[in-house]
Image 1 (cartoon, rainbow, N blue to C red):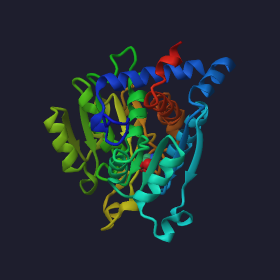
Image 2: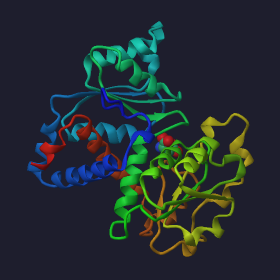
Image 3: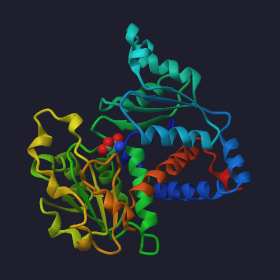
Image 4: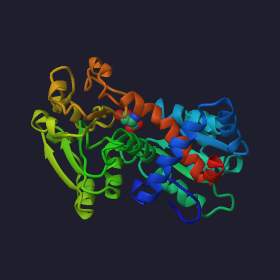
Length: 326
Ligand code: ASP
């Protein structure tokens, strides 16, 4: 986060204190919303604020959960989801468009197919008089910091009473090379003690070197395998991802034999009885729907956690967390 404005761009900027605080705010906001009075109080919390949702790349969950998080807190919303109906088609630059959004709203939440655009937007904001926070809601195949936050919350709460994330072995499976959610989650792991990561993927989709370098730098233990069965029983969590075929340049998806990187009735008996299964969704064939009814399937809860964690983030960005407690 920038010291000038509370931007959310790069997960490497989060520290443990902030992560723990966001998890606590999430719990408190959820608890408060359970009564009519509490929900009304939440709706008044940021009723003087407006948000712009600038989503020029496809989105279901991130868009809807941010939109609903805003509404839970009384934040008015406006959106652009199709840049072909904005003035960008008249040749307006991205910088000018962004400056225009900042004239009308108090926070800009943005998802784009390009890497690095949210960072550029944040840098621009730091130079103009009406600077508003930028939240990166997914920057191409690069980063998805708010997904990583909700993943941390899901892991922490699933392991409550078992020491939280510290000391756990977390498997990440599927398209690790182009999956921005696992890339962001890897960055956050430096905040936890004695975590071991196990990357499970075909060679063509293995985790990129930039992330591995980061893990080495921060002394986070990791291993890699192409054989799910060999590690299944050792995992406390398995984070499954779909193949990101939208980023194919050389038919990477077709090159990989993905049957070996899925969870279904054959894998479930081998998984630790206390382990959890996560997925950022949308899912493809990598998790069989029969797994949904198993208590270890955490992805639908993870999805719902996203709305509350994003509400917590907005509460923190606008600095009203103390009003929530009173
Ligand atoms: N919904 C997640 C994302 O936007 C995961 C995915 O699309 O596979 O990155």
